[in-house]
Length: 104
Image: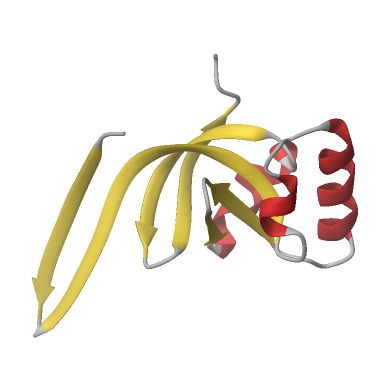
């Protein structure tokens, strides 16, 4: 995993954003890591839960991240799937630049 860290100091406030590429599974906030297998059953549950109002989350290993509001449309077609995300992270919130199915 390549990681670039950008630190900007503006008017006394420190902001850090990291640009990177991650491979993980898009799940829902209710079930989280339970759907990291990306099986057909898990995909159906994630679509059902997000359709009922649960937020989509990104599961990478044992960690569960949330998405910012701007990323919702980019991940919508990949609910329940294992994906590769290019983007940035601030705290535990992922901002998606691009998302695709992994090639391997």
